[in-house]
Length: 114
Length: 112
Image (cartoon, rainbow over all chains, first blue to last red; front, side):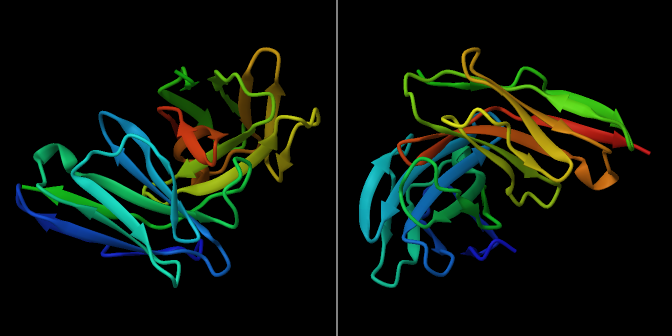
């Protein structure tokens, strides 16, 4: 158990819908990262937050947004869902935002868009 | 584009034997970090080993060790005394500006 929690574990929804994925980082970790793992794109970085502020963006679609709250949990919002958004979404956390910090991953949320 | 390449989509090893998984990367940074993560069928991402680029000494973690060749930008993972529980996808990753850039992964099978 990495100490990072994600809810829900599974999510099945229809095209055009909106969903919210939730992540609680390890105790003491200030950085939260979101990654998407799909069969065709592999593991891709989406976005990073540090102590409530957005710090880096990767290949995140405009239909996707995220935020980190004062209690440091984070939410990833996916809207106008398409079939291609079906993937495993990981949250990871680390103490700081340095490139050398070990990132600990949550169990992931498997999103299926029908 | 700064990439991480794992040239072996699949590998197989006999139980108790040794196997080496390859990884090469591209970077313009002088100070960076490299990681190997394991993803078993449960899909959980588990850190296997971490290497600081400024350290010449290769990292080791029990049965897992790396061969880090900075000039060649190579970072291979050696698994000794392979066990059935080592069967998983293995991802090489480079730390960049706080996020990770992953390779496509190598699927390791362990034969009893």
